[in-house]
Amino acid sequence: MSQVDPESLLVFPCDFPIKVMAHARENIEASIVTIVRRHVPDLGEGAVTTRMSKGGKYLAVTATFQAQSRAQLDTLYEELTKQEFVVMVL
Image (cartoon, rainbow, N blue to C red; front, side, top):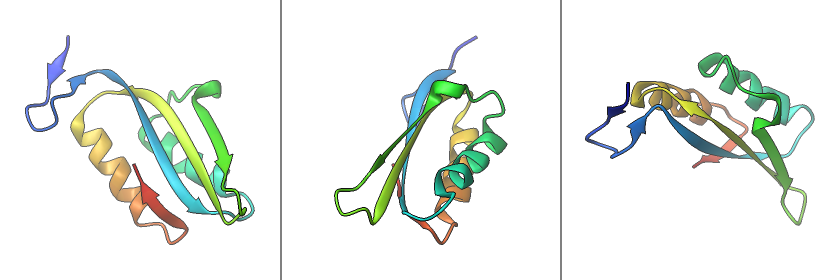
C-alpha cells in the first residue's frame, strides 16, 4: 500500500537515490555502504555507483534503493551527515 508523505510529496515506497560526497580516502565507499545498509538491509549489489572528482580529493557515492518511509530517509541522512569524512549528502 502506498503512503504519501505530505511534507515531502513523496509516495512511499519509492526508488530513491542518495548521493554522498566525501573526502577520498581508503575504504570510504565501504564505510558509506555499511551505513546505508544499516538503514536499507536489502540494498542490491548494483545499487551503488561511485565517481572520483577531477582532482581526486572527493568521492561521490550514489546508492539507489526503495525507500519505505520519510523516517527511514531522515535517520539515514542524519547518520551520514554526522560522519567526519562526509562533505555533503544530497
